[in-house]
Amino acid sequence: MKKLLLGSIVLFLFSASGLMFQISCSKEVKAENTLLQNEGLKQLGKISYKSQGDYWLANYNGTGQQKLNIPLPSV
Image 1 (spheres, one colour):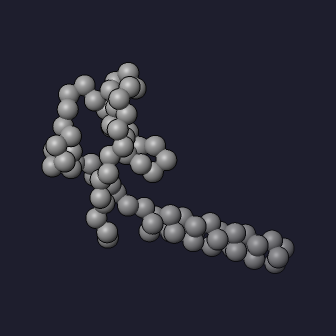
Image 2: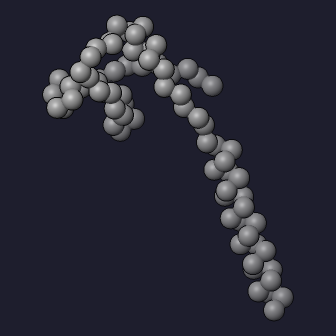
């Protein structure tokens, strides 16, 4: 019975530490249209998306893909 209680406490502490790690590492990202306006890329009929860590700009039907080079600020 003692080992069962000790094992339960250890598993609880392990899961709590994993949860605290995830909470501390999460960052809120806010998108701003000013990045596209500053680069002169504001166009109607376009969508932007992220694929494999890169940002892309394309027509709604998927043609005319352009890779966007947006420098992210270091924190």
